Image 1 (cartoon, rainbow, N blue to C red):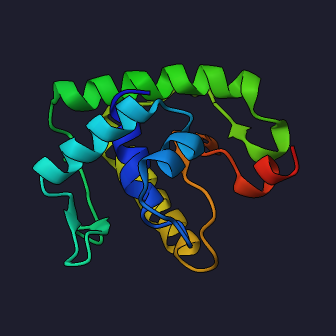
Image 2 (cartoon, rainbow, N blue to C red):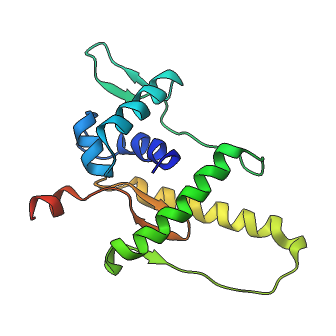
Length: 158
């Protein structure tokens, strides 16, 4: 998890009761402590995370978005990583905690702007739905939906 670890770490700040410590991040995301430190330093450097007067790390911005319909190698790399993670999660995560779906359909490519609009509206509706309630884990949607975190309750039962 390279680029994905950056978005996963920043999203962990939204999890209820999250403590932004290297050890907790490393355990929850299954990444090394060294990688966790690198990600946190990168987030601090680019201003996505900041330190409070007490020395605690917090998100610098409530919402972070990437560009849409703009070519970016970083975004391409992130999408490739998402696909690779999806392949692994298909094997690792029990079916009750994931949903992979696909459809194949014939279409007129002239309608692609409408398709993108509907997909973006769906993501916004899903985001609004998930804003409420307790936040316990970080998940990723790529019309593959699975936890990126190790569930603390599950870990306590091991």
